[in-house]
Image 1 (cartoon, rainbow, N blue to C red):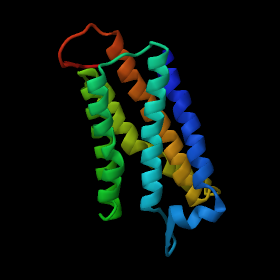
Image 2 (image 1 turned 180 degrees about the vertical axis):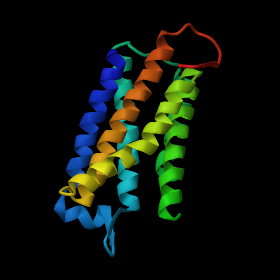
Image 3 (image 1 turned 90 degrees about the vertical axis):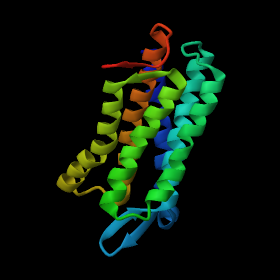
Image 4 (image 1 turned 60 degrees about the vertical axis):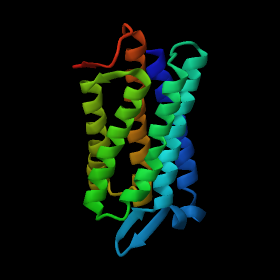
Length: 195
């Protein structure tokens, strides 16, 4: 639980830093593009969000590692960093696609890259956690949009910011849970588990 809690706290703090940077009125034109009645995040906001998410995972792991809650092979960690570092590149590549396709493709690839990173680091596969990552990646913005449509008092910019806060927090908890579960499991080669 200490590992999961660490990932949650670090993600929350990183999310607040993201909100502080992204909500600056002077920078709204940098982070968002305005097309007719739509407010859409720019590539820069997507890169900032994915970079902040990757940073939060690295900091949370570093804290857990220094506390000796998690220890994994240095080689696997380096390869895992390379895999997760593709997130900003993927965000940039899918941005030119139509909005619905971009949404589902990026969210699906996000879950796949996170699961791939965790498989590289832990050499374990958990179907349940991977499925939850996919569900969180796709459903968080959809559920947040219902609240936005009902309340309507929140600006579109804050909707995007709160979507990042909620999504990154939930994905970070699942990321930390996967690592913690793998650290307590008996050592073995890549195994699949229903959990």
